[in-house]
Image (cartoon, rainbow over all chains, first blue to last red; front, side, top):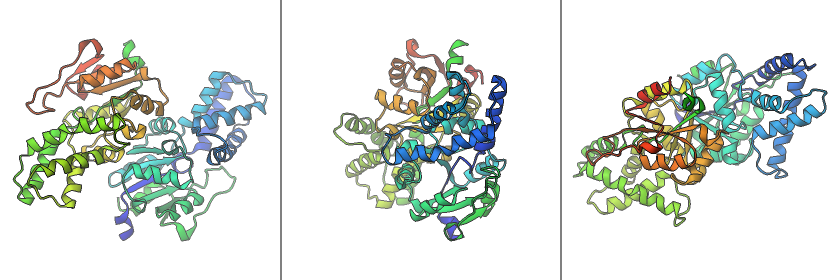
Length: 236
Length: 236
């Protein structure tokens, strides 16, 4: 019970942990492509777009590219990806596609589980998504965040330690009072080194059938199947 | 109806507009002073503390003082104020008093009215309060903000135009799509010049019986008695 008593804040990774970005992108790509009569392999397109996410952030992390928010990185990746296809997307289509990331559906357990957690904790995002994306996304998916925290507020992407430090500093709490929730062991390992508490949520379908990630027992304080189970584990 | 259609975001001044800072400070000052056996004129003390708020922000606005968040300005004002009294406040008492500003009660119409507005609009704070103060305050008062925007995110206090510009930029919306809600005509006049829409909410008791502010008809798009009336005027 000591562990739970120390926690005051629950911060959540969003893409993959709270929302099903892949299924939501595929659904929206299929809708748009159907309306436009494009020949588009939506799952492949979604995966290729997402594959450019890490490398695009790395350019910002290394300083090769000055601060650029995620909408703009998504746009640049999309333009590069479209160049490699025969799809004729209009400027309006491209704007719409960038905003697909503002309309991602939550995993079924997330909205109610997050709402339960807010009864006892300060619950927020801790995402590489920019603020507008996260605010619009919360409206779309019905997520009752107490606070939107974002790489955009620190001008540093995760998993740069200063991204976590600067966002948590806005809450005026110690890192040790914060539970970070993510479906990605690498992020939990990084925040564990900063003294944050860690919860792994299993999302076996995040990448479709491309294989799933597993928790690292030695750094995870909680491991669960969804936000409802996490809320129960935290006694809410 | 055109005016309402243009609005996508509702941002609210907090102190005085959403919460009764004066009544809440007096209540908390009386409780603490009763427990400590202090001879303290709570309404006078609250008014004196608040009177130092504008001048302390002015030091930051002019650059005389580097960026300092509101908790720290409140602390400095409090220490100066305590020096002028015979009150013997411990360091714990002082921390507690600074946090009085994190536990302000809402005006009765605010929680439900704000919740109604969130059904149709992105609804957020636009306050000189720092993020931690606003997040804790929302929990205390039951305010369902979609997003916490603050002078702290821009490192500029209201009514510096860049404070509004930088916060609204985080939402990736034009200033003209934002309705600013405040009980203070001066603030509405400033944001009106930036192209924002304006709603005046009358709070005749904000300063107790020290007189009340009145709307400036020429710059106010909506004028109402509370958030419930504003929600109705906006068709929610």
